[in-house]
Image: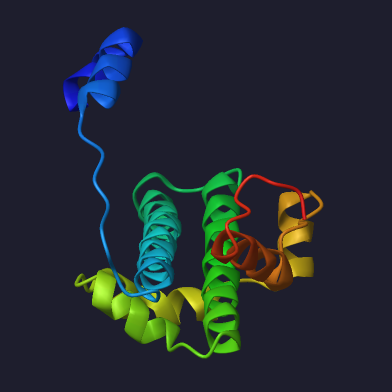
Length: 162
């Protein structure tokens, strides 16, 4: 099945799906919602690592190449802002459903980068209006937008309009 998907072989995929036996598993009712929360934590970790990487890249490039036109400063500022509001949104979403979001992340991510960088990135992140001035753009994303996105994901409404 993996090879058929990798090759984009639709007839083979259909054949394998139709030829495979159908199984039924009995699991506690709570299993699927818990699995969904763990997947959501992994998504959060992935996105936050990407944002942290962008901040670190921008700082590195400023140090090694300079930043005559302010491009790396803008990239770093935008990534730090996104990181901070991402962290705040995850905390608000998980506390709103009565879950310790940090514990959920720790259960799914054993790395050290997020813990090592989180406070510094959040402290260097500009306010929304400061970022708008630097980027000369309308910064529409805020904590509430991201919390709504997590709620839609939790409710199985990924890709659907609210």
